Amino acid sequence: MLNSFFSALSTGFSGQVFHALFGAAPVWVPILLVTVWWDFWLHYKQRAWVKEQGSVLLEVRIPRDMLKSPFAMELFLNTLYNPVTGNLIAVYWKGAMRVWFSLELVSIDGIVHFYIWTTKGYKSRIETQLYAQFPNIEVHEVPDYALAVHYNPAERTFGWFGQFTLTKADPHPIKTYIDYGLDRDPKEEYKHDPLVSTLEFLGSLKKGEQAWIQIMIQAHAKEGLSLGRIVPKPDWKDAIKKEIQDIVDKGKIKSEDDKKPSTMVSLSKGQQDTIAAIERTTAKVAFDTMIRATYFASKEAYNPTNIGGIIGSVMQFNAPGSNGFRPDFGSAYAYPWQDFGGRMRADNERKLLEAYKRRSFFHPPFKNFHGKPFILTTEELATLWHFPSGLVAATPTLTRIPSKKAEAPSNLPI
Image 1 (cartoon, helix red, strand yellow):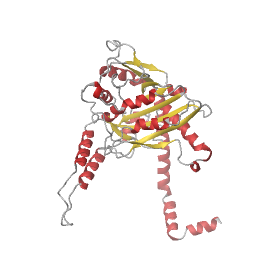
Image 2 (cartoon, helix red, strand yellow):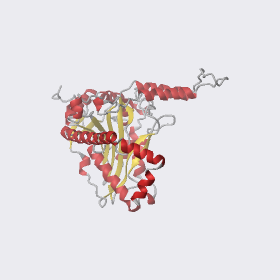
Image 3 (spheres, helix red, strand yellow):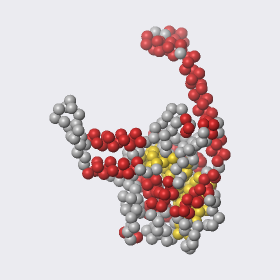
Image 4 (cartoon, helix red, strand yellow):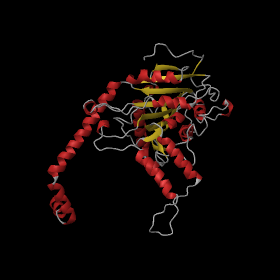
């Protein structure tokens, strides 16, 4: 039987391809082996480097009289931009990578927390920069709440656990705090902060319920040898130009002579606004981003209607004509026949929980886990994660400072 197989394989076009591959084996086999070894080596060194960095979780507690605009958060996020990894020895021998951060908004039993996860080496820098923009806050290193949760379907139900992606190409911005008018200084009663509805939802959860929102960020940059890539990857500047050109091309008026290219352009008000929004984006610092979210609860407290609440907390920033978010990879399946017995869902939940705990998406072991990073600017990130005004956000379960702080701690590192 094998003889007849190889006999058939040796004839015709397939036989020519087979002989060509076999003859070129001394070339492509070593390349394949070196590529596999290289990936394994880099993966191993990066995991060792990540472990060496260590991590801390910082909780930010805000005062009741917080009156800062989200622009202050944007200034803080600008200080986190660091695309540098070191020299080639650090990248390929030590496994050095671009630093990454996780901005988290969490409700545990209805108590709402602002968290920042970072490596130990960045703790002092984050504290200093936060106090520079928000002198009246308090920053505390706290135990990692995620590590206290173990995957046990007999104890709790994961209603939804998943990742998000953008509805349009990266250059199209979401509706930001500037579009909401939060960059101006109107009276407090006229401000409409989209984050408030998220806080109200998180604060409405009952004992036994938890909802987590994780926004992981890493400085966006052109990737080459210095960032661990053999094949270069361009930054998003070319994509921005292409999006603008596509809009302009759609607005071109057809020439009477089909052989001559059109030079007349007529853009609608919506197209002009879209180009203006994209151009405003180019002036901002950009981060590679991944957003994860989950709602789960004890068997007794589980409320399936809160699944829509956690997904809607992220998708509420969507707007017609602008960019937005949609669920991408998730633990659940739409139809029963896609996952008989629920084994695949359980496996997805287990892996997503582990990836969340490790804050792993830009690095092993969950690098690019069921998705790819999208790009958000500091303006967009400050819209998703900022400290709302105490007068606008009256959520009673939001962790706040009971009394006003006079100034930042005097013993901060310089």
